[in-house]
Amino acid sequence: MDKRRGFTLVELLVVIAIIAILMAILMPTLRLAKEQGKRAVCLSNMKQLMLAWILYAEDYEDSIVNGDAGHWHGNERPWVEKCWHNDYAIGAKLPVEEQLDGIMAGALWPYCLNLELYKCPTGYRGHMLTYTIADSMDGRPQPGSPRGRGPEDVINQLLIKNRSQIRQPDSRFVFLDEGWTSADSYAVYQTRNPPQWWDDPPWRHGAGVTISFADGHSGHWKWKGAETIKHAKEFDVGRPAGSGKQNLLPTTLEGKQDLYLVRKSCWWEIEPTVP
Image 1 (cartoon, helix red, strand yellow):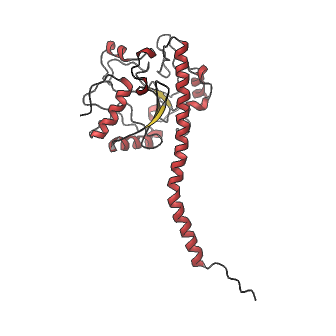
Image 2: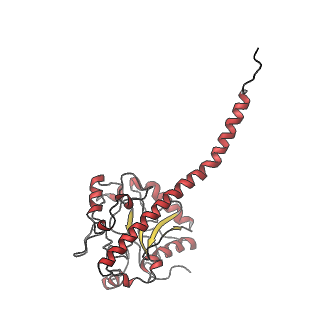
Image 3: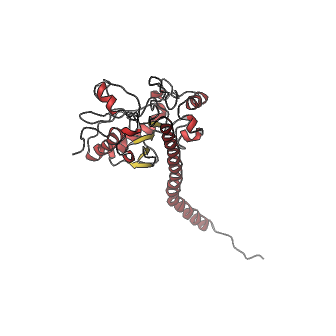
């Protein structure tokens, strides 16, 4: 008779348990590797957009493109035409074809003819534009608005219209990945006491934000403040339903440092906010 033995039930359960333990150990590493790959794609997209932004300026005697998405500044065509729904703040979005038409009608399209470069691979489903431009880079001028950025003459001095106005371009951000399609430009209070956020801090590729700078390089900032991370994560989870909580008021030193970094990189000339 055949005397060969198979695996016992106990042996099979032990093997299954070992595999389960290994998977539990490896899955976070695999997720991290996958996220880092998507971050690399996002950084590459932003570098391509920055190249387009620079080429546009070189063709127009260093005048930069209108960064106010969907809004003309006099005779300045915006970098993208309207891609956002009027009710975008509560989660509504335009049909995909309309969003794509808005991108292709923008002033930057002739310099960046690839629709995939306008969206982060981890952007929200149905949002074809996830990148935005800083308020300061010929973005949305709103004197007298609740952003508290001062009278019109001050705003006109702070809004960058020409690359020659940019001080320390390696520290001034241009594009920012919000992960969804929003209107206008990325709004940051230039003056506010006590200091507070206007647009929410994004939660992109981990506890931070992906950005590109006026000198052409891109990078990822990690938030330092636990309150910044908590708010950004809650906002990110609620975004499809439109649960933004604007005007976050940081209370910790690390939270104030996060806000100071963004304000300084956007406007350069700001009121001191960090002890």
